[in-house]
Length: 189
Image (cartoon, rainbow, N blue to C red; front, side, top):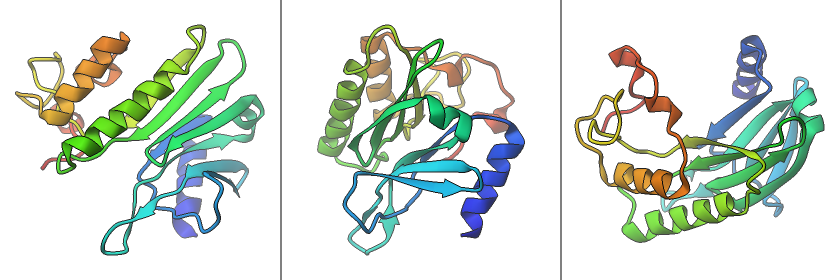
């Protein structure tokens, strides 16, 4: 597939070893919760996407890793199609959780279920591991919660996100650094 090759070439060009992927829309035809696919010297690891009521693929999370990173991969846990955790050995040991949160149009029940799943994944991470959450939280964080942000006020998903960050004593790195206005958003509703 041309898109996969383009992704691999861009990945290699950036010189990184691990890339989190959200909403890849790859539906696995077989039953394993996690699929490994070799791509031009790298490995794409994905949870399955799902079909919506119009039979269009949506969701799914994953990681693209180099062969070097793959050697350090200890275990992959697919908590749900929206939450996947990868534990890596090394110095330091780290856990990477890649997620795709429900959008602002989702029901409160869907959002609650997602945050329960994410909290379980975080709670299952040993304290000695460096935790990195690679994400698409589908949030707007307002100036009431962060210094370097585009939005004036947080939306519902932003409020839930900030509550979880405070409860888990995490750091929101994306709002920690000043950026020009065009780099402060990835979508506008």
